[in-house]
Amino acid sequence: MNNNEKLEKILEKVQKAPRYTGGEMNTDIKGWDECPLHFGFCFPDTYEVGMSHLGLKILYGLINREAWSLCERFFMPWTDMIEQMKEEGLPLLSIESRRPMSDFDVVGFTLQYEMSYSNILAMLEMGGVPVLGSDRGETDPIVVAGGPCAYNPEPLADFIDAFMIGDGEDVMGELNRVILERKEKGLSRAECLRALSELEGVYVPSLYDVEYLPDGRIASVTPRCPEAKASVKRRVVVDLNDTYYPEEIPVPYTEVVFDRIMLEIMRGCTRGCRFCQAGMLYRPVRERSMEKLIDLAEKLEKATGYEEISLSSLSSGDYSCLPELIRELMRRMKDKRVSISLPSLRIDSVLKESLEETQQVRKTSLTFAPEAGTQRLRDVINKGVTEEDLLEKVRDAFEGGWNSVKLYFMDGLPTETDADLEGIGDLARKVVSEYFKVPKDQRARGLRVTVSASTFVPKPFTPFQWAAQDTIDEIQRKQGVLRHALNVKGVTFNWHEPYLSFLEACFARGDRRLGKVLHQAYRKGCILDGWSETFRFDAWMDAFRECGLDPAFYANRVREKDEILPWDHIDSGITKQFLWHEKEKSEQALTTRDCRQGCNGCGLQRWKGVCAYADAGRV
Image (cartoon, rainbow, N blue to C red):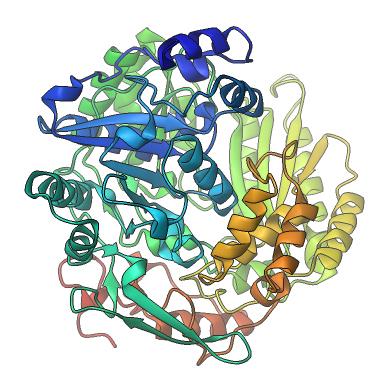
């Protein structure tokens, strides 16, 4: 029985078989022998999560549009499928041609979430690729990775051959050409990795030595060869109008998390929230033109038949032509019954006109992120919004016919007190009050206010990268304070289990010694850690103990100003000096202005022509 026959047999025994069948509309199936370079794009989570990811769709189309390269997809199977694969001796197969991962020249993982790391090891092993980079031979694929978590690549240094740092659209083609050259010229694996390290934005961890101090902190990170750069500078796509964006995308046969067109209207953010890694990593702001977006929207709607277009960015309300864009999209899409949604709304954005436009087809729940319950703490994190900003926007929404509002907060932020937590309850009560201020005959029935609180995780390349995360006991105590404060009629409270956030903090700021912990936890059966039903915290703690490492060293420890951080050899464009200054301002609850109001000297001014708001004369 061949692999295809084994898969067909298994599909009858697993839930959600369309996760594994492929054949979706707009799938790009190319002849294997017609393309000399074969790229396996791996999303280290389930199909429905992976197929909601915009980056996958961009890079999938980008690689496949080249005549010489082919891209096929791999996703993490669910537990029932894994059991069946083991019973049948079936390797992990690509969705398109149902080939094992080991057949590909390049295997690329997108790193969106630290708690998917164990899935990377599982997918490699199921795909027939040695898990450890040191065990790979000349015929094994080159294993690469990119995405926001790649900015601290060290916990995965034992498993990933090369990391792509920054925007992937340009560096992807360059990386693939180097690997194709290896294949055509018969270069060794070592020669290929050295050539990859010469590319801007590519980090090859095996070409660096890391030394540690007796107390466990890093003493030095040193390149081992001339090709390896002392500082790896991230790649930045400057003009979004000229860069690739797909005009058709695969349409799943089964429900996925975000089942709609995602139209990236801009990249980056100028607000400078001190907890927000994405807001720092994706600087500077770059917008797509309104004409380009309308053209893309029409082509994607025609190619997919989706009934919703989501205007995607870190802060969609900051797009400079948002009202005009929405008005024109609604004019063109209204008769097709295609709705426009606005995620990632800034509370202080000018939104009333835009919201009125988007409700013409159907209303969706509005989401706002005050992040903190008091003005003092919002100033600490540089959120730049007030209570009145929030109440004004929910008032507009309730008067406009909305009845469902989602509010996102964090617990465990630096300098947080119980008064800040109780302030979340006060805000929720005021939001409910705004609903009842609307005359009964004018408001929509059935108020739904959902308050979600995630646990703060200090992230690299933010002003809070030096901060300690609260202990699990303290997080649980604070969540109890929140449950009491949010016992409000009409309000639903959701919170995150602190154990997962604790491990996320370990790996977010971990060094390469954590690779041993990850490998040991995987051997103990830890996979699909981002899912509550499969997460095994005790096994993770056993892995830390067996490797002689203390997780509190990574999660609950304050870093000092002069400490070498595991990611200091990665240049994000934002200087360490700027981040430390922002940390000091946070301790005094001092805010920093929006970049659009004047350059704050974050470091991008060093990169001439990259940031439209950079003041080259500023230190």
